[in-house]
Length: 436
Image 1: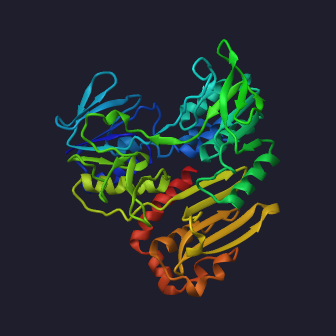
Image 2: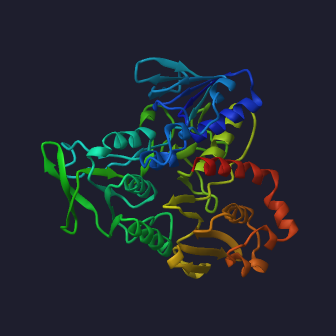
């Protein structure tokens, strides 16, 4: 069997391991437009900030590709898929045939058209190792930077620049940072930590024009009319599934590549996993892109299993975001900002001075969401309780305890959370934690 995997991040790794579990003889070719082996993407801010070296970036043990007998094509971009001829075409013109194809291309940064952007030199995105390396390469010439976007990517870019003593201003359109992944109190705590470390935060505003002449940036003008002087701009508004190369392939693409619960696409023998895929949501069953590291690993594992003739079913993606910012850890999962709070039971605890916050969201006595800031050690237990849909009636009070853990749960529930399927999911989370 000839397996081809387009992309070389966590979803690809999950697929490789699953394939090799069932098929030790097949040929596996991995094609990546990046020039690096798989690496921990959450680490790029620490690479920029000088906290870690390039040697620490590796996501996989040395020798992984050789041991798994992978034909690795780095710095090679797939520009088209010929599903009828069962081959992919590279930018260099070469075609690579496949029997089974996995699309795990991740996401591309979304860069909206901003007046004055076209002729300026120092405008960057911040999603890859090379993005961080470019910024690090000109670090000596950066005095003031503006980061457009106060989500996970924007805050990590700001942190990395702050770590090398650069003046940074974050501009966010919403009323708080981390607005899509976290609730208002959590966003305020993170913003407070940012300001304590010298990062300026502007909310409910956005950049409408990048000023300067001769390719040199002098600053940005905001919608409010305010002007912020700077010499570098990082656009960190978000990412979109990297699926534009599939035009004419017959593969169904909505916001992402549409897949079933075995990660199969609309075209036979073509699969998709990770940030590029549009798979079922855990709660609603609706299909959405789920750019979450542990979820990508799980999807890759399911796709690789199906490609090699096995069978696993995807239970649905559980929204989960994690960021450690100046040593304050945060995790959000599930339903954190209910549209109709009257349908939910919400419990909160906060100690803003010490950057501590906890929010528990229950629906019909079942845990459906949680936000943890400061103390996140037992986040895996919360996600397990959500996925197992356990009746939390006897445990509502203990959920808010700072040391809540397995000791607070019955033996029956502990056994359910440690079931083999739960362990498989947690292995993906552990991989992510190691990368983070």
